[in-house]
Length: 326
Length: 287
Ligand SMILES: Nc1ncnc2c1ncn2[C@@H]1O[C@H](COP(=O)(O)OP(=O)(O)O)[C@@H](O)[C@H]1O
Ligand SMILES: [Mg+2]
Image (tube, rainbow over all chains, first blue to last red):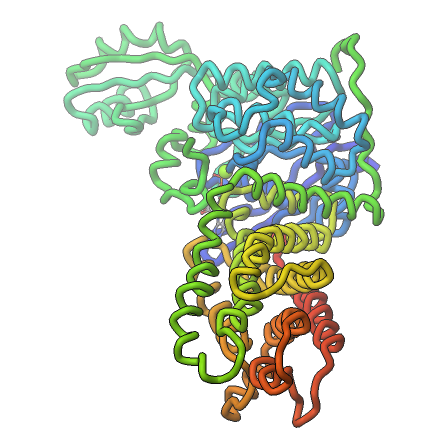
């Protein structure tokens, strides 16, 4: 019974492509009404997980339910209760904004009077009502995303899936997308499952799972994950990285490594530690940066690499090449 | 969650998938093809170039050769074939356009909706067939220029036959492109299948006195059964000697038996359903 109360349940989910195990055994429960973030670098398996949950891909092993329906056996029921915004654009650019929504309403069998009212509601919510008669062709990337969000909401889904809704957008537009999602939560009871590889965006979620190479490596509220780290991140640049790492280990018992071109380590009360650093190291230090723990550090703590390292290490996925360029 | 907003949200219930819902889904897929066709006027003009060249350049060029063989203008003979050929290409591209829908992502919007693949593909076929038939109206309007009279009954029959043929070809296009992921591979597919269908259908030469192998090939080609009724309807409305008719419109024979036109139409209709069914079966909805 615990399962039917959850908006999404995932048990032992595996998806294997020819050479890659994109999803390598995931277990997860998403509660109704929460905004759940799925965070990880490119190629972590986020899109693949969403495709399975949305009935667009078959799992190699494991089971999942969405809104109480099995994604393999009750596909139509699942489809009826979910809204989707994919990583790649799925609008018809030769139709107007309103024609795209009209198409969606008909495809989902929404009765015509309600559909007209809903179109106005969702287009107003994303500030596109005035532009409803324009061809999508003429829309900017941000406007297209907003239109896709509006379309995903048209049939009042119980669960809304958003795959990288902010990718490729400027910071201001990214912020406004999150504003719309917050507004949405204020208006109606809906579960939102959102993926991103921008660590800072996790702050908008009630709970997040950090994924790497198809595994969930951490799962909690953003605050709990950060307080679990408890240390600040210190990055120094100096003339001899190897020597610095050696001395940090010898004198302070700190484990340091080179990340993003700087010697990086975690230490409690980082700001207070800086004077000791200068006193204790024989190596000449050129610069020091101290950062309060962020989700990037959470990622670093659980996977032993920064999110940028993780992305650099992995060849670009074929899916990422196809990702939205506009 | 937090306080409920005072503005009421319109309650939506997505209905269980009944037949009515499936019909609505097919209708809106059809409607999208119509909207896109209306937006793309240049396509209408460019699609006319080939049939006009066939009819007036090839037709005129060859008519001097064939003039001796009776009282039929070769262009008149070509007219039904050119109608069929133009519909053939337009419909094939409409079917193949599913590959573009896949490439530009819109296909996903359809695949993740709570409707059957049959509804989506039927809507697509009806849309492609309507577009192809609308385009053929322009060629139909040229009829008097090649000695075919304007006749209402003939025109209505022709439109019906062209629509049926377009549906069949569109379904074939969908079947062929069901698993194609790349736009580049779609074009060769059209060339490799549609061109032979055209040449082996009797649309550009009479089916009389063919060598054995060609006779077999044309008899097996479903396009033959779509083209022959069209020619038959046109020739019914021409003033011809029986000898000329026998040369230019010999009909289709199975081992000496003359296949009646209604049976030919029934064969095309059945082929439509079979190809649509195969396309649905082959269409991968998941990865
Ligand atoms: N259709 C596919 N065929 C083969 N490999 C795939 C396919 N889709 C994804 N992958 C691989 O699976 C891994 C996870 O991809 P994806 O789920 O798109 O990651 P993310 O969305 O987290 O960036 C990547 O290594 C990618 O190359
Ligand atoms: Mg992705």
